[in-house]
Length: 278
Image (cartoon, rainbow, N blue to C red):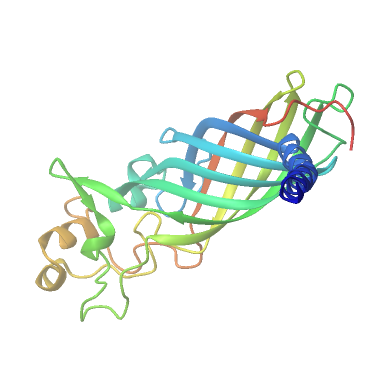
């Protein structure tokens, strides 16, 4: 009999102890949102100094997680893919067109940060159902600048177009994994009690000048570069038009590269939807 009482007591304690845990889990789900953003991406750097939303804008996609802290603040985490590209062929300056360099790169980005609502807002609320917002994050991303040479794709980081890893330069190969600070603006609008739609534009400040493989290194004599890094490195380090002699720096050493991701996102609550305000 005592054994039955002991088992019953354990079951009661287990059930009552699970109530707060279930409540916490339900509360966590009700404050959690997931979503998907689809749009575009582009880069700003030596091969595209000023052209926002240019003709080489590529696709982007972002998986989004948000946690509602209060009516003005949400934590967010994102995993993004974007493709960026640039080419001297688009330049208005004749000397830049003569340089004749080009690249494209896939970018994979993992970021986390804070979203600030300009107005009181909560997903599912019928009164506070829209708001402009700002966001700022810390991110780590992977790049891989490439170009086409004689119909073949070439990974530029591995060949050392500025004499990296040779006696011609004191520089090592630049890392393909880099840090960035994403920030931007957006506008979100509820679609019922469990969904919202948002428009977002973001820029990424990077700490590298080699997103495009064009950094602060000098143009190196092709014959010398071919001795150390191979013929492909020599040809792709200076693709200038015949009769045009390139000298000095390959790029602008005073600036780092940037990239942007923007688009339309669809956000969904993981809970039952919440019409109360806080």
